[in-house]
Image (tube, rainbow, N blue to C red; front, side):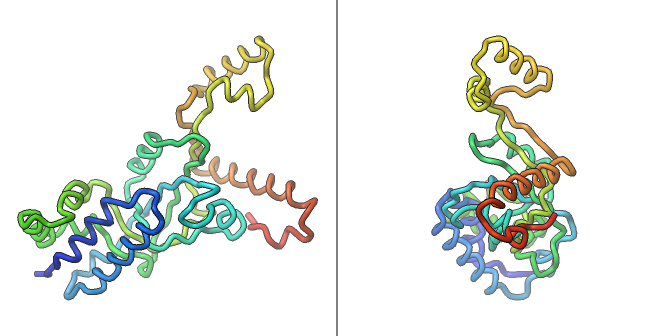
Length: 251
């Protein structure tokens, strides 16, 4: 039977509790969890394996304080390096959470990967499936462990697998944007005539584009939208950057 030290249980609970948008908090939590995993002894192989497809929900933020911005690395280098990150084997879970938490002015994306063995840091779902770990977590809670609340709140509900895998442009399987209000959309299109405003609203109703709700593109449609975005970047930059072709990701 594997022994799961309190430090490992605390580090995992802190990871599942999260750090908000604080970059330093993420680095601190990741370092603690990494050290705790390295200190484990006689652990079962299955907690470091994942044969299922994994999904990562992510808002793409131009001024992301954790990495200086998402757009340049994704569109110019083809990937965003994230280090340790939480993924899920449940696509509907990732998609539902994104619809629930859509944020104005930001693009939501879901990335899908079949992780390689070296990319799997910890399979939390597999961990909770083990009776010895569940018993260790129960004893930790009974002792009043500092992170027991977070540990027992999340358990394996998120089908979470921690991976160290980049977010690759080619792995985008869904995109989500928040539909603007009628007033905002008309302002963006410079539409002021009442008849044209009514026509825009009729089109939104016809296509089920309800203001402030989530608009999804999935599979090939999502990749097509990425191709359009790359094309627009190229047109915008060609006039000012010589030999721009060699800097752009080829799709």
